[in-house]
Amino acid sequence: MSPNEMMLEKSETLTSEQIVELTRKHNYGTWRFQKGWNPMHIVDAEGCYIVDGKGKRYLDFSAQLMCSNLGHKNQVVIDAIAKQAQQLSYAMPGYATEVRAELSKLLVEVLPAGLSKFFFTTSGTEANEAAFKIARMYTGKTKIIARYRSYHGSTTGSIAATGDPRRWAMEPGGKGPGVIFGPEVNCYKCPIRHTYPGCGIACADYLEHMIRNESDVAAVLIEPVVGTNGVLVPPDEYMPKLRKICDEYGVLLIADEVMSGWGRTGEWFAMNHWGVVPDILTTAKGITGAYVPLGLCATSGKIADFFEDHYFAHGHTYEAHPMTLAPAVAAIREMQRMDLVARAKGLEPYLRGKLEELKAKHPSVGDVRGKGLFWAVDLVKNRTTKEPFGTYSDKVAGRPLLVDQIAGKILADGVTIQAWVSHFIIAPPLIITKVQIDFGIDALDRHLSIADALVE
Ligand code: PLP
Image 1: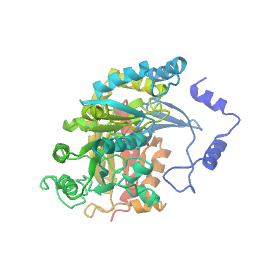
Image 2: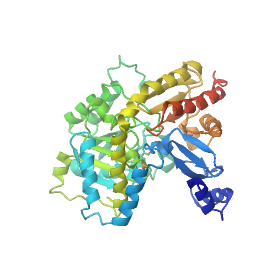
Image 3: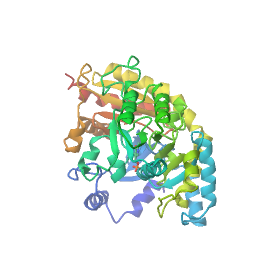
Image 4: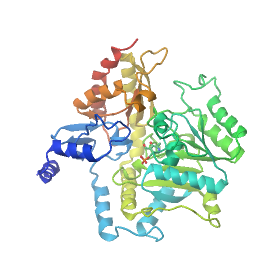
């Protein structure tokens, strides 16, 4: 009996329709109006595929939420989870455990050099909350400069630092004290209407202007490659320039690599592309290949030294939970064994070429951009004005979006893809093959005609 058949048999008391209905009735569908939420019933997953309650297989073209980097059913990770459960399923965070020591040693090897002291959480959001507190305790200052078109999490502090309208729904509650926003780096639609390279990276200069004109700035918070808000890749000069500005004014640089980390962009961490080490790096998602929830807040030695004789006022019951750390060790070793970071880098020209072809063929595609296996396909009504098909206001008001309609058609063709406001995110498991890339791109190609027909 296949695992899929076993799953179906196990839930024989509930039909697929009942499972969907019970899920819908008793659970919140996130980032949406509840009306109209019709969750897909998933029973199985293997490699780059997921399987629904009717046995239909779908290519997972966005690695679920850009997190299933190793693909599904990696036996090494599964075995590590089972072994840890049998050996030690929980220990208070105040204890030392072998798995914690082993993961710490491994992290020092793969993280940007110098990030050597860790706080483990169970999500990216919590990793960022830890980063904000650490930055504020260390500097004795309050303000965090975040950027528009960013996402840093859903709890009070992290949503307050999120620079997209998801936070509007929480305001004023979500407007935490001490977060101010600067311009995002977005060369396709520059928020301050400059053009690269003539701009001299004016968006970074603007952040400096903010630091100079604000008192009490603890840190600048960035997604090195912005994720959900459009896979925005900075020009090469941006990150070294920002590092220099932060050093000059004694402000910490926090890199949120929750999505961009773990080989996604063709380097272990996106910051490696520019040889820039942040003072604090946060991550989650790919750290365990999404087999269990784990987040990480990694800090520099100088921050670590500070807390030798300063009170570290932070902690969680499930921090450094052994069941989350064992699969991280296994996932990182699997990434090394399969050389997945090099694989993501090696597949970049192929995926880029396919996406450039889509752009050449479809007038609705305004821009394709990305790094490694992390790409956005940005749709516009008009290539000159770059007007999108949907806006953030449409999203938070619950108005139907064209990208969701197209994603529905792509799904019917056996491909799951993340659609966001007016772009798609392509971020498959790093084990994807060229044949599978072709399959995903072909589905997109077939249905972009819906948008083409609306081009003005
Ligand atoms: N930061 C970034 C850049 C993210 O992409 C996300 C989630 O998508 C988060 C933080 C929040 O992480 P989590 O959903 O694990 O809380």
